[in-house]
Structures are given as structure tokens and as C-alpha cells.
Length: 407
Image (cartoon, rainbow, N blue to C red):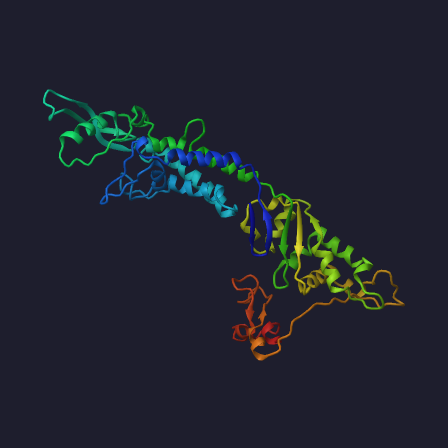
């Protein structure tokens, strides 16, 4: 499962889902039937589920609840939560939370007698016996739990289709186990769809999905985009393997031009970082990326990251920002590798390509970003980059450090 969002360029989630998906597809196919489970649907004026799967989707909704009052989240919510995990391209933290909550809700439903599908009451035909007068059979009606379609009900339907004018009932399969005169004894299709046999019910599949998500791995290399307007340079400057690589690259003489120039060649510097893979020391370090890589906190399994690659834009603005954060005061004392202070003055200089606006229209539409945490157009807001024109009308434009005042 690969994802791309925010500053996340490549993030693959892998787990043991193949057999689980097969079980899930088999479950849907099994319960996407109606008449063989005693369900015939309603009428144009009384729209009712036509299959067990439709019953599942609508289970717990007040429209179809037999007491007409409850609005509990039932099996339909669980069905949606499992589908998010097994049918989607990515597994988000919110999907995991939905699944955990839906499992708990379903367990509550099964634990409450009147909400459990096997205890739903029906007033139906409990006994049907034909008499000498074929138009007057002996019919007994009463309360049954679990399912209305008793064998006696089917016998009644068969008779009524012949002898009752305009009778709208339909024939469908029935099973003695589906209904019972006592609560907690029936095993109707809806209850079986939830609890299953041999751990093939929806609840078992949901629990297996929860376990599979917990064991997700993040194989290969995760890739992030790093931009000067984001918090990524600041966060990366605290990662040990990143700091180590910064020092390694800067002490590599091949990235510098010959002579007394102290600035690395821009393209060589960029390539030295974009082509490098960084090792993640532990889960805490992996989780720390969520604080400065936009969009990463949405995904399950971040703590399982082992390696990352950083993609810096070609203008080197973000890369230079990272280097300055890592080097600190050593920017002034750094000695170009392979040189001595007598030949090349100490100090590291960095080059970046900054596109200048050539017209007033370009100037007003140029994208800028403020790094102040309370700025309406700052990186923590929903619109991290705005035009100069917008910045000029900002309520906080009087800040001395406002980017709008520097254009």
C-alpha cells in the first residue's frame, strides 16, 4: 500500500493481508444473498433490505430497528471500518481508530439482549395445519425471536399464494435454527454474519484486521520532500544521522570548486543529499518525523520506518537552511577541506537560486511564507504559502519580521 500526501513522497505499508482479504471477499459473497437466508425485501412503499449484506449495512439504524427508537452504531459501522482497511490503498490513523471503536460498539450490541440480532422479536406464524376445509387452515401465531420466517410461516405462504386473493407474500428458504421461542437461542442469518462459524464472521475478520494493522511493516526507503517554508529543516537538524551526513558532505572536497571559493557547487551539494539514505535509530526517532513532515502523522506504521531519503528542491533554499541549523557558529570557522587558513579564508558560504520578480504583477503574486507560529499565513495554518498581495493586508503586517515587509 503506497501513499503520497503533503511532504510525503513515498511511504509503503506492507502487512499480511492476502488471506484476510480472501476471507473478507468470501464473507461478502456469502451474505450478498437474500432468499436463501429468508429475506425477500419490501415493497415500493415499504423499502426493506433485500439481502443479509443490506441488513448488515443498515443494522442499528433507527429506520430499520424494530423498536423504532435506537440509533446505535451497529454492524454497518463495523462493515465500513473493515472496508477502509482491506479495500483501500492506504491505512490511516483514523481508519484504525474507526475499526477499534466499531469492534467495541459491536461487542456492546451483542451484550445487550434487546439489541442482539438473535433476540429481535417477531409476531409470526408458529403453527400451520391444513384442515378438511382447504380454505380454513388451523393457523397459530405468536412471538418468535431471531427471524420471522419459520417453517410454519413458509407453509402458510404456500397456502396463501393459492387461496388468498392479492396476497403479496413471497417464498424463501427457512431453517429451524433461525428462530426460537426463547431469547438467546435463535441463530438467525444476521447473527451468524456477525459471529460466524469457525471464526468466519464479521467480528472475527475485524479482529484479524486489527491484528494485521498492528503488525504492519514499512519496507524499503521512505521519501520526504523538504521545503524551506516547512518545519522540516529544523526537525531534521536534530536527527543524529542527518547531522552526521551534513558534516560528512561538507568535509568532502569534491563538492567544492577549485581555488579560493568557499561555497560548494550548488548541484553537487544537492546531489550529495538527495542521493543519500539515512538510517533511523529507533522508534522514537522515527516518530519524531511526524512533528515536522507534513501529512506523515496521518499514516499507521510511522514508528516502523528504518530508512529515509530526503528530497530537497533544486534551489537549495531548504538544504542551506538545514546546513546552517546543523553548523551553527561553525559556519564562521569552517575550513574548506584540503585548504589552510593562510590560503583560503575560514567560513562556509552557501548559494541558492532565488527567482526574482521582474514585473509588479509577478511581485504581487509571488508566493511567500511566514515562520512566526501565530502568523495567519504561517506553516502551521491551512494555507502555508500566500501571495505578497495577501501578506500586505495581513492583520499582523506590523511585525518587523513579516515577510510582507521585506518584498
